[in-house]
Image 1 (cartoon, rainbow, N blue to C red):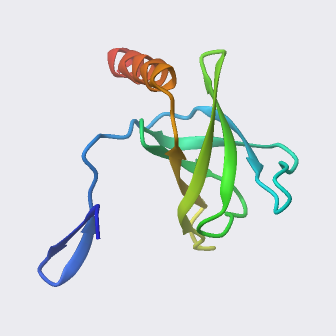
Image 2 (image 1 turned 90 degrees about the vertical axis):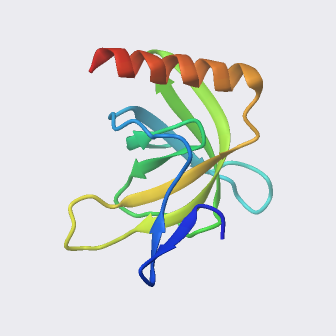
Length: 124
Protein backbone atom coordinates (compact mmCIF):
# COMPACT_ATOMS: atom_id res chain seq x y z
CA UNK A 1 0.00 0.00 0.00
CA UNK A 2 1.35 3.42 -0.93
CA UNK A 3 2.35 5.58 2.01
CA UNK A 4 2.88 2.66 4.40
CA UNK A 5 6.23 1.15 5.33
CA UNK A 6 6.70 -2.01 7.35
CA UNK A 7 9.33 -1.92 10.11
CA UNK A 8 9.79 -4.70 12.63
CA UNK A 9 6.42 -6.26 11.78
CA UNK A 10 4.57 -2.97 12.35
CA UNK A 11 3.18 -0.59 9.77
CA UNK A 12 4.36 3.01 9.96
CA UNK A 13 2.73 5.76 7.93
CA UNK A 14 4.98 8.11 6.00
CA UNK A 15 4.53 10.77 3.36
CA UNK A 16 6.88 12.34 0.88
CA UNK A 17 6.01 15.96 1.74
CA UNK A 18 5.79 17.50 5.20
CA UNK A 19 2.56 18.82 6.64
CA UNK A 20 2.83 22.02 8.58
CA UNK A 21 1.34 22.09 12.06
CA UNK A 22 -0.65 25.29 12.05
CA UNK A 23 -4.21 26.02 13.04
CA UNK A 24 -5.91 27.28 9.90
CA UNK A 25 -9.65 27.98 9.63
CA UNK A 26 -11.55 25.63 7.32
CA UNK A 27 -15.16 25.25 6.23
CA UNK A 28 -16.37 21.78 5.22
CA UNK A 29 -19.45 20.85 3.21
CA UNK A 30 -20.34 17.21 2.64
CA UNK A 31 -21.31 16.16 -0.88
CA UNK A 32 -24.79 14.72 -0.82
CA UNK A 33 -26.08 11.77 -2.84
CA UNK A 34 -27.92 14.02 -5.31
CA UNK A 35 -24.76 15.95 -6.11
CA UNK A 36 -25.52 18.95 -3.91
CA UNK A 37 -23.65 20.14 -0.87
CA UNK A 38 -24.75 19.95 2.75
CA UNK A 39 -24.58 22.84 5.20
CA UNK A 40 -21.22 24.45 5.91
CA UNK A 41 -19.45 23.36 9.08
CA UNK A 42 -16.51 25.28 10.51
CA UNK A 43 -13.41 23.47 11.78
CA UNK A 44 -9.64 23.96 11.74
CA UNK A 45 -6.50 22.12 10.72
CA UNK A 46 -4.02 20.43 12.99
CA UNK A 47 -1.68 20.14 10.03
CA UNK A 48 -1.82 21.10 6.39
CA UNK A 49 0.07 20.10 3.27
CA UNK A 50 -0.31 20.22 -0.50
CA UNK A 51 -1.83 16.73 -0.52
CA UNK A 52 -4.30 17.17 2.33
CA UNK A 53 -4.87 18.02 5.97
CA UNK A 54 -5.94 16.74 9.36
CA UNK A 55 -9.19 18.51 10.24
CA UNK A 56 -10.18 18.79 13.90
CA UNK A 57 -13.92 18.08 14.19
CA UNK A 58 -16.18 16.79 16.99
CA UNK A 59 -17.72 14.07 14.81
CA UNK A 60 -15.52 12.81 11.97
CA UNK A 61 -17.25 11.68 8.79
CA UNK A 62 -16.90 8.17 7.40
CA UNK A 63 -13.89 7.15 5.35
CA UNK A 64 -14.54 7.77 1.66
CA UNK A 65 -16.92 10.69 2.25
CA UNK A 66 -16.49 13.38 -0.40
CA UNK A 67 -16.29 17.00 0.71
CA UNK A 68 -15.92 20.54 -0.48
CA UNK A 69 -13.24 22.14 1.68
CA UNK A 70 -12.56 25.88 1.91
CA UNK A 71 -9.21 26.67 3.55
CA UNK A 72 -8.61 30.25 4.73
CA UNK A 73 -5.13 31.15 3.51
CA UNK A 74 -4.78 34.47 5.33
CA UNK A 75 -8.04 35.82 3.95
CA UNK A 76 -7.73 34.15 0.55
CA UNK A 77 -10.07 31.15 0.27
CA UNK A 78 -8.81 27.96 -1.31
CA UNK A 79 -11.83 25.88 -2.36
CA UNK A 80 -11.25 22.27 -3.39
CA UNK A 81 -12.73 18.80 -3.41
CA UNK A 82 -11.49 16.37 -0.78
CA UNK A 83 -12.05 12.84 0.47
CA UNK A 84 -11.92 11.52 4.04
CA UNK A 85 -9.06 8.99 4.14
CA UNK A 86 -8.97 8.17 7.87
CA UNK A 87 -10.47 9.22 11.18
CA UNK A 88 -9.31 9.63 14.76
CA UNK A 89 -12.27 9.15 17.10
CA UNK A 90 -10.75 8.15 20.45
CA UNK A 91 -13.13 9.57 23.07
CA UNK A 92 -10.30 9.69 25.64
CA UNK A 93 -8.30 11.99 23.36
CA UNK A 94 -9.29 15.66 23.24
CA UNK A 95 -8.22 15.87 19.59
CA UNK A 96 -10.75 14.16 17.32
CA UNK A 97 -10.87 14.57 13.59
CA UNK A 98 -10.25 13.23 10.13
CA UNK A 99 -7.47 13.10 7.60
CA UNK A 100 -8.55 14.36 4.19
CA UNK A 101 -6.87 14.13 0.81
CA UNK A 102 -7.31 17.04 -1.59
CA UNK A 103 -8.60 16.01 -5.01
CA UNK A 104 -7.97 17.59 -8.39
CA UNK A 105 -6.13 20.73 -7.32
CA UNK A 106 -5.43 23.08 -10.21
CA UNK A 107 -1.87 24.33 -10.74
CA UNK A 108 -2.86 27.80 -9.51
CA UNK A 109 -4.28 26.28 -6.31
CA UNK A 110 -1.12 24.27 -5.69
CA UNK A 111 1.02 27.39 -6.16
CA UNK A 112 -1.24 29.39 -3.81
CA UNK A 113 -1.07 26.67 -1.14
CA UNK A 114 2.70 26.26 -1.54
CA UNK A 115 3.21 30.01 -1.17
CA UNK A 116 1.10 29.98 2.01
CA UNK A 117 2.99 26.99 3.45
CA UNK A 118 6.36 28.56 2.62
CA UNK A 119 5.21 31.67 4.51
CA UNK A 120 4.49 29.48 7.53
CA UNK A 121 8.01 28.10 7.46
CA UNK A 122 9.39 31.63 7.52
CA UNK A 123 7.17 32.53 10.49
CA UNK A 124 8.67 29.89 12.81
